[in-house]
Amino acid sequence: MAAPVAADVANLLGLGGDTEVVALAGAWLPVVTAQVKAYTRGRGFTEGVPADDVAMVIVTSTARGVSNPENVRSESIGDYSISRQVTEGWTLPELAILNGYRKRAA
Image 1 (spheres, one colour):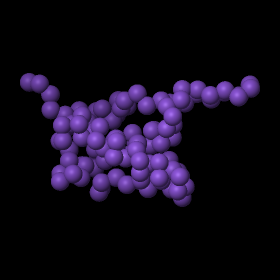
Image 2 (cartoon, rainbow, N blue to C red):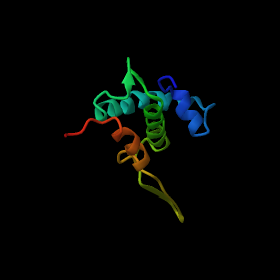
Image 3 (cartoon, rainbow, N blue to C red):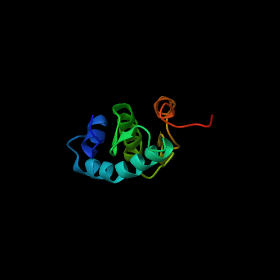
């Protein structure tokens, strides 16, 4: 896989044709990529391009941010309420991948 692009995120969300989602994903991708690169201390990247599994972490983490960019926990209108997932770091499966690249103390 090449470096993730905004369309990859939008497609994962099932919204590949939505230009607003693609634009928002484009804004989130460099942020998440920088976070992943910092967490792994640059491991898992070759000439700036992430390994396939690292790229998927970038895509899935970006998708969470795009689906709730305001990081709102819940919203209510009258009797209707919705609870949302907020971005509080990586999921356990994402950490399992990233920790494989992260250099840890001996």
